[in-house]
Image 1 (tube, rainbow, N blue to C red):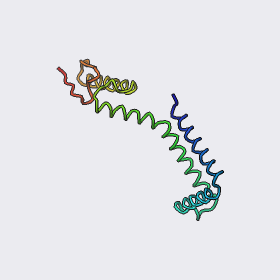
Image 2: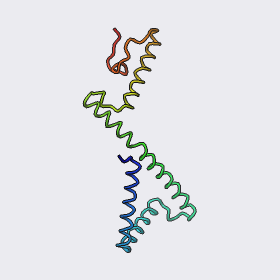
Image 3: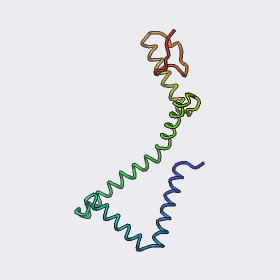
Image 4: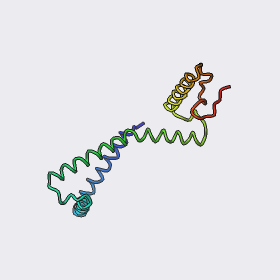
Amino acid sequence: MLDSASVSTVILLAAASALLLAAMLYPSSLLRWLQRKRYQYEVTFSLYMLTPTEKFIFNSILFLLLSLLIIAASLYLPEHLFLIANRMFYYFSGDEETLGPAANKAGQQIVTSSFATAASHLGKEPLHQGPLAGQGRGYMEP
């Protein structure tokens, strides 16, 4: 199965090859379109009144920030969306087994730590450490 980095690499290579093919087939219209986009970019950010050194600094900072954003999104967004989808499915179905192993493990750690904290405040051992206890799930001591 392909991971997200491979998929994004394939998409970027396909887009670059499509752009190269369009440049070879329609050079004048593509060149006009690129010049118009560059003009719109310079007018939007008021770059036309900067010196070449200032333009270079501004474009470098913008490129750095956008590349960091794209890298972070490609690394962390798929896992985050998977976690959100699992939680939404849990809210609709109520089945804890549908959650991924990482979510179950994290949930068990939260439950165990909350019972240990509650037991230390009460001065006794926790009575129940099951998966449905704690975190506002209606658990009451007998």
